[in-house]
Every structure is written in C-alpha cells, then in structure tokens.
Length: 74
Image (cartoon, rainbow, N blue to C red; front, side, top):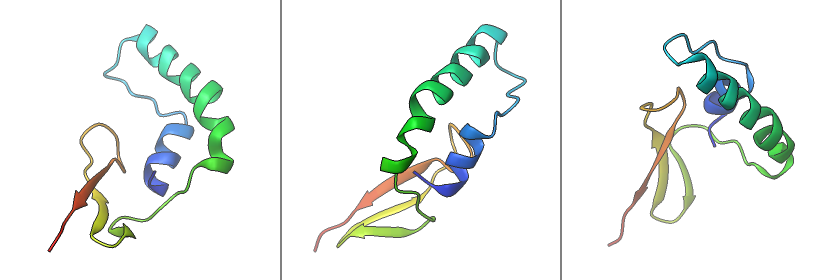
C-alpha cells in the first residue's frame, strides 16, 4: 500500500460525496481491520519495483495514493 493511501484512509477523510451510512461503514472498516494490520503492511512509494519486472505505480482512481501493478517480461 502506498504511504499516501495509508495516510488518506487512516486520516479520517471527510468524503463529503458519500452517503452518511457508507462513510460510517468505511470508518469502521478502517479502524477495525486496517489499523491493526499496520505491522504487516509494507508502505511503499510510487514507482517501486517489488520484484524483477513488477512495478507499482500511482493510479489515483478510487483513493489518493491508489496503486496499480505493471508486470513486464522479456
């Protein structure tokens, strides 16, 4: 997960375009599931190679800092 996405999700975003009940659900999921996993989540910067031919890059569609994966071979 990118540093930016972690900060966004754990920083209690206001998300004004979401319905109140969905916003409450999202906050509950982040606090009960994501936060306790922090020790097991590796935060990365954009354009990080995680293995030969596999690159993580910024794809901010769903959330700021959302990542996509590019796999390349010879």
